[in-house]
Image 1 (cartoon, rainbow over the protein chains, first blue to last red):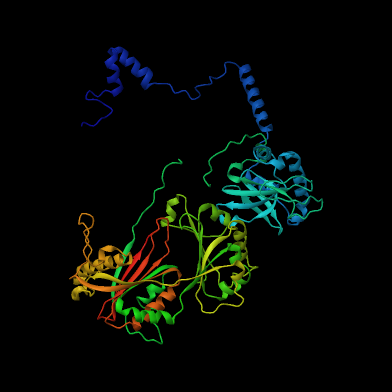
Image 2: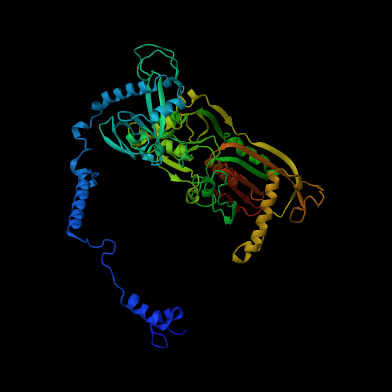
Length: 248
Length: 355
């Protein structure tokens, strides 16, 4: 094939050749010079310079107002800033399990109040109430996990973030447990109310006020961390649908 | 997503034939490290042992068997927590020499085995994730990620497996939470002493003794029972292959008690074209079968005494079959044949199944 070059055999630019197919020679020459070879390049094509000083001043004022509004709006903290502020640090003295025990009791009372009578029947009604509940102060135990070394971890939740639970264990250790691929079990003792038995085969005939913790009837439920990966604030209004889980 | 069948890599069982020399047997120092003794003792959990001998050797064999006690095993229902705690753990597992196999089909249910001090758990994905013990994926490349099964191996005789240590506590936690249902175990005590009081007694075991079932005086057509002379060496490979295949086929038919090997068998060649190879000799043979939970060390001892005490003109065939290893139910087997007139030589077939 012949090499394609800028000039044709007649030493004309190729644009001229193409134009000459459509227009007569004078038109060709005019279009070539005005619109192609001497084409003006606008540097600021969309904003024509203001016609007078008043319009220029008004434009300045608008720009300043908008930028002021933007700086007033609060931006989320970056990771470095968060670390420097130390908002989520727990000091060594504060990492004790005994400190969070009263919080746990408070949480148990809160859950019993939310569930009301559903604590005895269990099932769908209890589940929908529990999904919107807050879990700070719950005592969770990891029961099944894709990472096997996490199984058996038990502690009180001190922080419920989007992807993890931060718990304090009985041995005063702070552990960060990811929610992915993990199943957590939570037990709620019924708390000395003389009532009928509950699920999970925990049948207790004695109905005394003073029962040891092991004998008290409990409601036990398991939370699939995979489906629970929302911040506790976001979970309040979320509708949960059943999904096929890849770990099961 | 839910209805596609899971692909798998299927491999059929393979048979390895060895034609070798047994070497001199010193009654004071029974051989353990050489073939065939090491292969026989290296099997796990033998289910069935079969011995085929000519009828005139039966008296000798009966005398040999009367000297030894019949192998005993017990069936007991325990949970894994019972195995790992109390007297049973300290006496039988830590100090003693026992062998245990739990019920279940490997590849489908969760199976536990205990042998040589190592507890092996074959688990499916849910049980593994609930147990919390570290293990390795089972199968070729973990079955390439589709519904993987897991193998957990723990050495229970090591000094770190004591209540109070972290590793052992994790095992106890798993046995209480993930494996708390009692299962049926087969138990075999390999050492000759039983600690007193018997630690199995509180779990009320059922004792079983594997007595041999004897089939005497079978009139059978015998094949050529001597390996061809030119079967040795690389040139004789084909000869050896033909001979060993035909002989193994005949031995299997005897074990199956097939009517094809009996004298005077007339079967329509449309149904079966099998003919006993050789020149049509006839003789009387005898077959003994032991079935149960047998130890490979017992098999080795029986084989040693047979080789030592049977006269050199009698031939015999001894085969051991293990419990099946996987879903397909294939089991591995070792068959040994000593020809008449050649007391130092043996022909061995090892059938290995792939899971």
